[in-house]
Length: 112
Image (cartoon, rainbow, N blue to C red; front, side, top):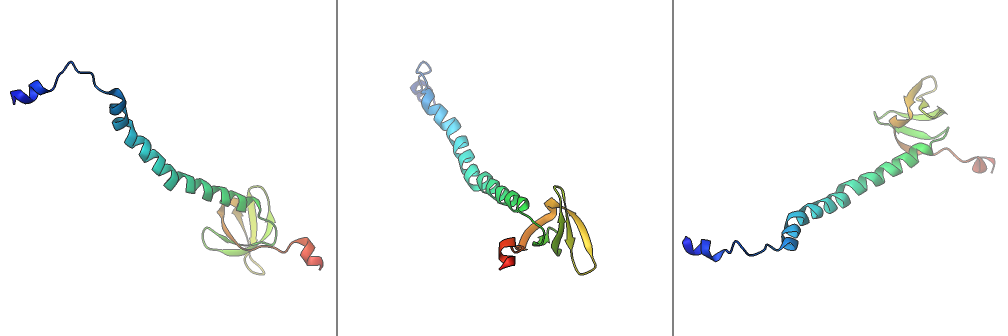
């Protein structure tokens, strides 16, 4: 036991670069991996969802988060009025739209 204690020289300076690498290296590596596996794909999905919500227009067939299918009758900055059938109209927040199933035909293609 005494030989082990004598072999470690307390006056020898520790290599600070190596100790910093071993201390912070795994943390930095974990952050980089989490960024590319979790954060970046989520930001990409959020960007495409915002583009979809901003491009909504009257006549689009959409599905809400709750699974309700309908056609956009009126649209404002915050709300969307969906026609579910010939009689029923329902008002939803714009953020409740999950996906667009069919876009309304553009005015140029209607005249042809």
